[in-house]
Image 1 (cartoon, rainbow, N blue to C red):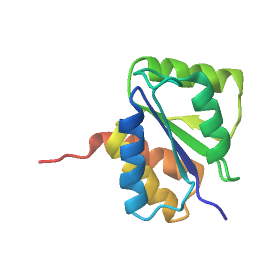
Image 2: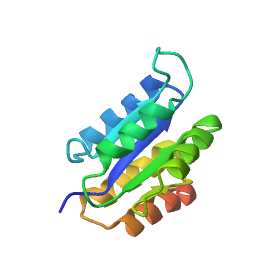
Image 3: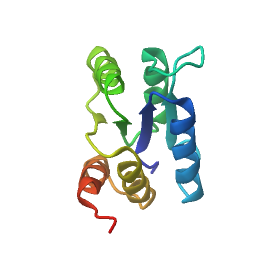
Image 4: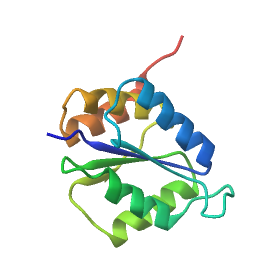
Amino acid sequence: MQPVGIVLVSHSAELASGLRALLDQLGVQPGAVIAAGGTADGRIGTSYDAIAAAVKDANQGSGVIVIPDLGSSVITARAVLEDHPQTDVVLVDAPFVEGAVAAAVTAAGGADLATVTTAAQEARHATKL
């Protein structure tokens, strides 16, 4: 069974791809995490088309969670998911880095969509100090 896919939506292509690189180093399955950051012409912002393509690419049959960074990335991700509703794709309110790490580790362990979603959300309560 394929792991739950994760889409990282950020205003910055570098931020999204850097976080994806971190998750890759943690041993997530190649292709399980897709970065959708920045605009098509390389500016800061979000791209509806990039998010839609990332969701499609990340869905290997076990569902997808979408983790946006802030502001308009939430609005754009929500628009994509409303225009293309799928019961196995979930927009998750989670801290971008901590939520993605928790989700990726949980997904790599073979957890289902609901468990991966919960792991990402619960990362909000992790203390650093």
